[in-house]
Length: 145
Image (cartoon, rainbow, N blue to C red; front, side, top):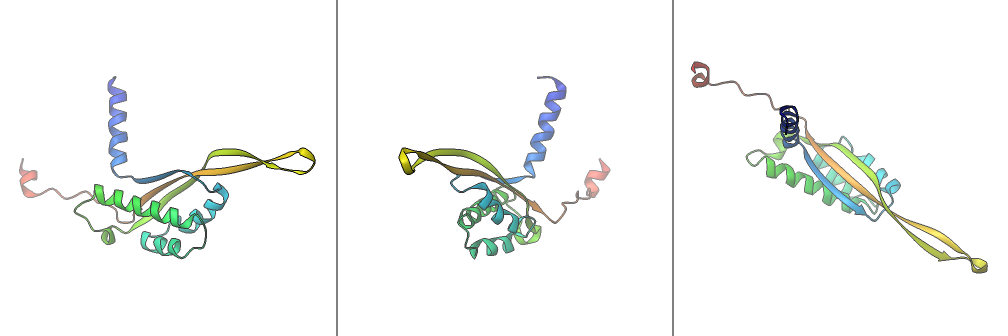
């Protein structure tokens, strides 16, 4: 692998270390209905988003709540020594993309059949921190070297 490719791959790896992502694939609900729930929690703090999803009557809300808890667990795995309250986590980005569509036939009058499309979706949730991690000041030992 060339030096330029190697450098860009290393930069991508470093950028991914600060991303806290959770994905739900082939969720058997239409993307249009799921986007209504996603719009409610986009840009909201994690604690408030969990409350919104817990009391939402929509079908996608429990699945999205579980996905949000998974993203928080991913954050905790990468930041073992830090507290979640101190970093002020929020839903940075949430995308609901169309998944596969199953096509079925429903009987119709006069020997015909109407097509039914059973839609699914893919949900990608990315957490962010409102607290900027400022670079640490070098200690005296590091400055003297």
